[in-house]
Length: 119
Image 1 (cartoon, rainbow, N blue to C red):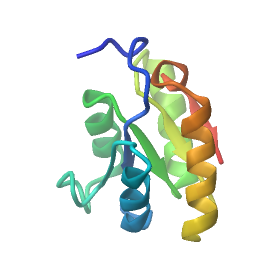
Image 2: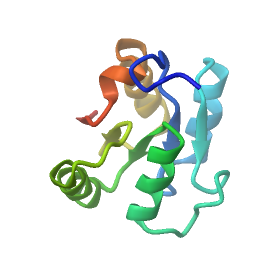
Image 3: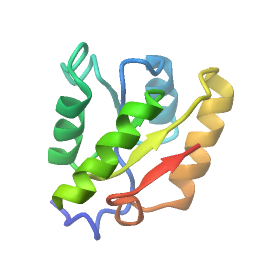
C-alpha cells in the first residue's frame, strides 16, 4: 500500500450523521467512500471512528464539528497522525456533494494528512 504522502486520492468515511446517499454519489464519481454503517462502525464513538479511519488511511466527513475539531487538536498534541477530518454544516445532498467533490478534486491524500478542513 502507498505511503500517505504517495496516496493520490482521498478515501472517505462518512460519519453516521452524513447521509449514506452521499457515499453512493461519490462512488459514481470514482471516489472511495464508505459509510460508518458499511464499515461496521455505526453507533461507535468519535474516537473509535477516528482510530478506524487513521488505521485505514481514510479521511472522515462529519457534521459533528465541535467534537471532531477537539479530537483533531488532541491528536496533534499527542503526535498522532490522521488522514484528514472534513467538517461541514451542509446537510442537503446536492450542495454537500458539490462541496465534497470540489475538495476531493483539489487535494491529494498527502495534502489532507493531519488537516482539518471546513466545507
